[in-house]
Image (cartoon, rainbow, N blue to C red; front, top):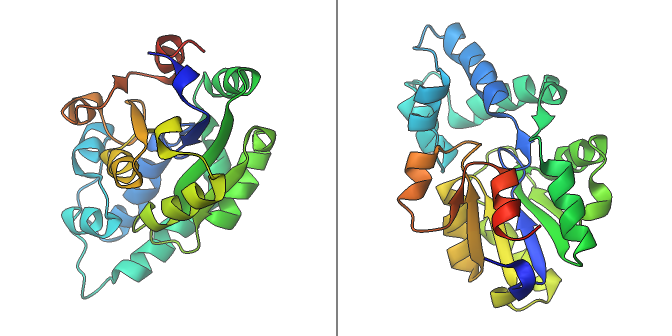
Length: 216
């Protein structure tokens, strides 16, 4: 594998560059505890979490009559944002982004996280200079990144065959395929290796192994 065939890397944020699975579990357990619903551990989270997030909430057992998806989204995001700086970057994030920049690759972020907050946290971790574009959603409901991805591709003005999207979920792969770009998956985030491995896309246990495979 080599990155010489690519001009641009598009990174997912949550779970790919930011190690926030444990925070996501903890915040969701707060919502579940308030309603006396079964709690999550990391294994159960990996089994249930998926896009669209609305379906994930249904699998957790929330009553859609008592708790609308919109209300649950507000409650979850409020809890997550209040604790967002408790998460840290994956160990190799700084090194890999720096290596890609040094290699002459342009980079962007495509995330289901709210755009304004995404900019703030990327700046907090000192990563902003690595990215040509930082693209997040304009709402808190995390429906899909596809429309946002099409807009990002238009802005990049790079042939899709020269773009690699790096993510941590099957949704990232779905988005990549719809956009016509290549995809690599990192199994250190919101979907486990076993789920990602069935996709046929290249899957790596962590960012460091991805970087080694692609010569960074």
